[in-house]
Structures are given as C-alpha cells and as structure tokens.
Length: 199
Image (cartoon, rainbow, N blue to C red; front, side, top):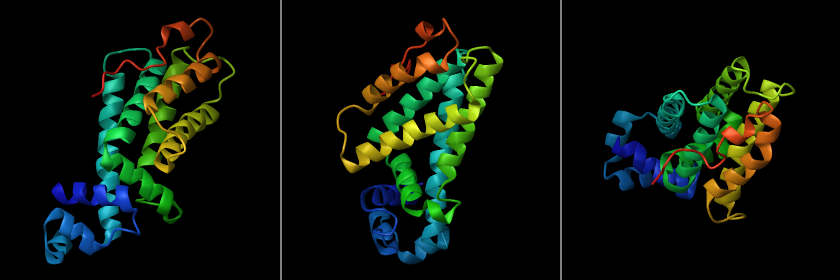
C-alpha cells in the first residue's frame, strides 16, 4: 500500500515522533480524511509498517529454509537478507527505528523484533535437533546473540558510527561466532558470507 510505504520512508528519515500525520498525508498524496479512512492513528500506521516488515521477514525465513540447506547456513543467510534490507528497504528500517524509539510502549512497535527472535529460536532448535549445534550452545543465549548482532548492526549504521557494507560486517561477525556455535567439524560447511545473491 502506497500510504504505508510513504509513511515508512518518513519514519525511516524523521523518526516516529518527527513525522506528523500531515507529513504522511502529503508524502502519500492523500488528504488527512483519506488517511483516517485507512488508519485511525499514527500508532495504527506504525503497526501496519511493522506488519509489512514481519511479512517480509516470514518470506525471508521461508526462502532461507526452502532449499533444504543446513539450518545454520539458513540462519546466516537470513541475517544477510536483513543486512541487505538495512541498506535498501525503508519499511524494515522504519520498523526498527520505531522499535528503538517506541519499544517501551510494546506492541505493535516491537513486532518485527519479536518475530525475528522467534524465527531465530526456531531455526536454532532445528539445528540442535539435527546435531548441527556445538554441544555447549544454549538456545536462549545463542538466539540473543544473533538478535543482538542484527540490532547492533542496525544501530551502528543508522547512527553513522560504522559505514561501508553491512553484509561484510555480518560476514566478519559470523566468522568469529560460527566456531562456537556450529558442531565440531561443521564450521567449514557454512559460508559466513551468506548464499543469497541480493541486489
């Protein structure tokens, strides 16, 4: 929906509190009355942005797991798709920025992170059941690490502290993390660069 994408671009650029309903209406080329026909509040609009980002996330998880690859490789691939979104996708960036600014308010502002944590935990449980995790790995700590890696990359690039390729930084982090995460002898089978070709 054009209205959601226009709002996402504004939230990404100006933040949730920095984007007024008038700004959103103007950017989308609709009247405030038309805006209120679709959304009763800015919070509801933020929820629609989160929902769109969550739909994208579910699609990425499906693609990552779809070819029957090693689950840890699929997890690496998923983080690289998120890294790509951080560089190119305002809907995801807006969902993460609103989480950072309004997360203390709970749902819907945290929906993307909640869904991402759930997906990561599910993937790690599958890897554990397949014998692909190092025996010392605890799912809760490992999922927290992966989520922190994604959130940290987003914050560092958003703030301008880090620059360059998000995916290259993810590759470097996975190179450090995989020896402690993967079962012995499996590290060499996992490509820390991710297997997904992203434009």
